[in-house]
Each structure stands twice: as structure tokens, then as C-alpha cells.
Amino acid sequence: MERTLSIVKPDGVERGLVGEVVKRFENAGIRIVGMRMVRLTRDQAKRFYAVHRERPFYDSVTQFMSSGPIVVMVLEGDRVIQRNRDLMGATNPKDAAAGTIRKDFATDIEKNVVHGSDAPETARTEIDFFFNAIEICG
Image (tube, rainbow, N blue to C red; front, top):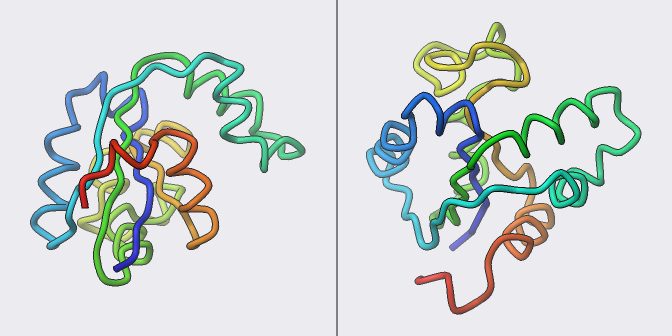
């Protein structure tokens, strides 16, 4: 069984899309084994996105991700990293496939409702950022 991190970003929480995102995971047979709502400080957002420190979007993404509550989830299942990425759709909603979360709900490339880990190593690091072992039920 593989695990990955999923985040409903501040725009998704504000727009009441948490239930819709959870429903899509459950309908796809993905188990949610950890979940909670948090609000990142700017410093925490900078630590979480440190890998992108040199990218032009770093300041705006850390500002955005600390602008309101987020819902973080640990997802579990067979090939769950790729399955989650398929459900999310392309980062840019203009490029996302029909029926994906980002195509259906994103307003722009940054306010694209969800985040998901892109590889097993990233998933482990991102899960450890938000959860300790006792908070994961699986």
C-alpha cells in the first residue's frame, strides 16, 4: 500500500469544496487514513515549499497557502500517488482533463483547490510535515 499527502488549499476550503474532494477520493476507492484542518503560518508555508525556494512563484504560493485554513489528508491505496494526481488534474486548470478537480473547480494556476505529493519520497516528507504516526489510522 502506498501513501500520499493531499491538501485542500485555502481557496477550496473557503469555497466549501472539502466534501466534494473527499467524495471524489472515496468514490475512486482511495482510503483517507489521516485528516485535519490547520492554518499554516507564513514561516511554516515557507518550510513546506522550501524545495521551490528558487522558483518565481515561491513568495506568492507561500503567501497564498498561509492566507486561510487548509485540510491536510493522508491517502492510502494501490498506486495512490498517481491516482490522486489523475483525480487532481494538471496544475494549470486550462490544461487539466475534463472531470478532474482542477478542471471543475480551480480559478487559476495558484488557486487550483488541491495539492498532492508527486513521488514516494516527497509523500513521506510531506506526510511527516503534518502528521505523526499516532494520527494516521491505517
